[in-house]
Amino acid sequence: MKFSKFIPEIDVTDQRSWVWRDGFQVSEVFMPLWQLLTNGNILVQASSKGLHDYLDFDGRILLSTVMPDELIDRLETKNYFRLINDLKPDATMIPDNYTYTDVPLYQSWSQTIRLVSFANDFLKLDTPLIGLVKGANLRQMDWTIRKQVEMNYASFAIPARELFEEERLDEFLPYILSTLKRNLSKNGFEFLLYGVDARL
Image (cartoon, rainbow, N blue to C red; front, side, top):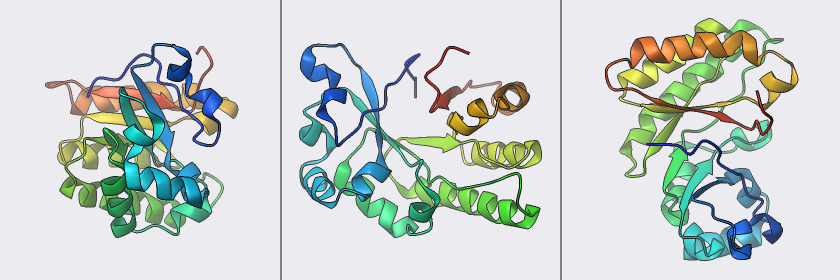
């Protein structure tokens, strides 16, 4: 899956962010799933029509699963599958998880293993998939990448907003890119920084 150099994220509750309606050329957008989950009426409409018809957008819609922790804990594979089948995005991230550096390692490993388990479950979908680079440390990030590559994932995103705000992105990014290149050197890969709109 080829990503554009910059992919805007829309706000489903604010039609001013639906810039294609004002004549701006947009080939693809990210749609945050959490906004739909916290706005029941909009979720019902979008699920009944599909995202393309609801947004009146003929470009590519990528579903973002990055969301608050309390929503992550509420969703199981069957919930994601139902939502994706109803919303009909052009591609979806695998489910997000939460890994923090200031908690015991067993907690972040538990979440990391859960992410890889979701990645395996999502192979049953017909929708193109975007793997996630997550982990509380480089070892966990390396493990999640390798496991997803073994499942033939070749498109990845890293939710990077917090790392960027903490000025730690430069610490992780070279290692992540090196790991992706090492594991996907033959067929190549796509990699996206998600949640960063500033020039690096």
